[in-house]
Length: 400
Image (cartoon, rainbow, N blue to C red; front, top):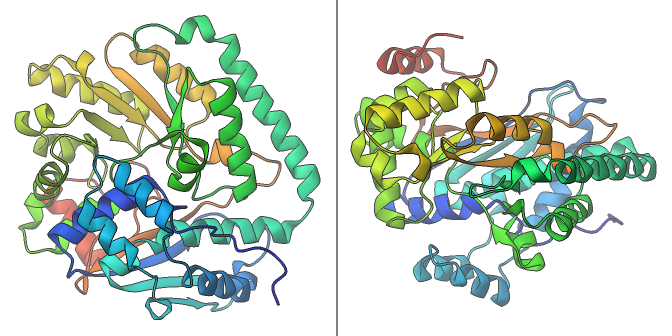
C-alpha cells in the first residue's frame, strides 16, 4: 500500500490554460489524435527511472478521479467557459490506456497518446506528480521548507520595500504560474496564500484553478504552445497555421482571454502574422523565450508600425522569472505599455534542492510531427529533423 495521500487532489488542480485550450479544441478539432512526451532537461540527483512504480500508482489514482459537482459549477461561473464544455467534463475521466510509463536504463519515459481531448489534460498532472515524488525521495523536507519559508519572506520584503516604485495607474502585477514544477501541493498553497494575503495590491492570481477556487482568487491563463502547434497538423497550409490558430481563438472566446503566445516559431515570424486585424483583436502578447527586453521592444515597435497606442495593450512575461527580474522589466517598460508577470518555479520551488527542468510537450498530431522553434536554445522539442528543417525554412527561423 502507498501511505501517502494522492498527489493530484482534484481534476480541477490544473492550469487554467489547459481548460481554455481544451474547450477551444473540443469545439474546433475534437478528432485530432495527439502524442505528448515527457522530457527532463536537467541532471536529476538520482535516476528518474527509480520513480516509475510510484508514478504508475499516482496515474492510477488520477484516472479514478471525476469532477465534483461544485467544481463543475465553479467552471460554469467563469464567463469564458461554455456550458456544453462543462457538460463534457461532467462525464470525463482520464483513460489509463492512453498513457504509458517506461524506464529504459536510467530514463523515465512517459507518453500520452490518443484523442487530443482525452490526453491533453495529462501534461500538468504528470509534471507535478514527478516533481513531488522526486522531492519526497530526496527527503530532508523539514529543513528544505524552513529555508524555502525564509526565501519567501525575502520575496515579500523585497516587494514591500519597492512599494513606492511599483504603484500608480499601471501598478506592478504578478501571478503564480508554478503548478507544474512545484515542490509540493501544500507548499504551493502556502506560497499563494502568503502573497494573496500580504500583497493583494500586486498579486493578481494563480494558474492553478483548484487553488483559485479554494482561496477565492482569480484563475489566470489563456493559451500555451500546444494549441498553436496542433494547427500545424489540421489541414491548413503550414505557413498559415498561426493565423488559423489565432482566428480560431478569436471565434471561440469573442474578446475574452486576449493574450497571444508569440514563440511557437519565433517572435519575428509571429509578428509577420500578427497583422492589424489580430493586433486590434488581442489585448496583448505573452513572452516565453528569448531575451525579454528585446522581445518587448519588438512588440512595441510592431504596435507603433501599426499605429496602435501600446499603452492600451499588455505584455505578459513568463519565462524563468524571479521577482527582481520582474521588477526590473516593470521599470523598463513602465509608462509605455501595461505589463504583467507570471512567476513559476521561483515562487513554488525556490529551495536548497534544485528544481527539475521537466516538460511534457505535444510532439505529434494525426501521426505527423509538430514542433515549436523557440527563441531560446534548448527549448525545441522534436525528434524529426526533416520536419524541423522544413518548419525553419517556411518561417525563416535560424537553426539553433
